[in-house]
Amino acid sequence: MDGNERPPRPGRGRAPRPAFWLLTRRRRGRTEVLAAELVVGARALAVFSFSEEARLFVGLGPLEGAGWRAAKIGAGELASLLLGPLRGVERVALDPLPGVGLEPANRLVCLSREGFLDLLLNG
Image (cartoon, rainbow, N blue to C red; front, side):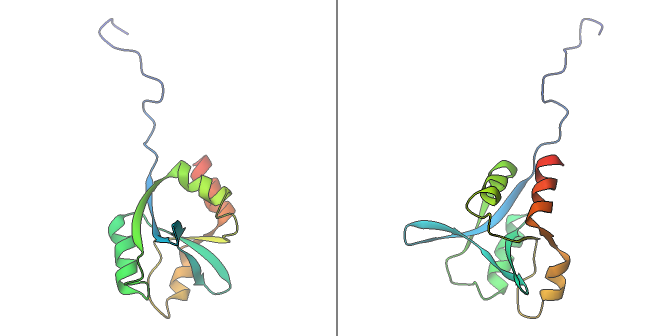
C-alpha cells in the first residue's frame, strides 16, 4: 500500500447473496408457501429467480385467482425454511413452468432438497 489506499473491508469482494422469489398466500391467518407436485410423485418447492417469472407462473397456471403472490426471500431465509417448516419438501424446482403436461420439463429444473441446500449454503 502506498498510503493512499485503504485496506479492504471484511466481506468486501464477495458476491452478494442472491434473492429468490417464492409464491405465498395468506390463509386462515397464516402464510402458506407453494409446495406442490410439480414432478410426479414428489412434493417440490417452486423457487424463482425473478418476480416476473413467479407472477407469470401464477397467471398462466391453475393458481390464477387463488391469492398467490410473489414474495422475495433471501438465501438464508430460504435455507431456514427448507431446514424447518418445509423440511418435508423432497425437491426444489428452479423457475418451473406452469401448466398441464410440463412435468418432463419441470423434472429437468428440479434438485433434491439436500442438493439445493448444499448449493445454497456452500456455493
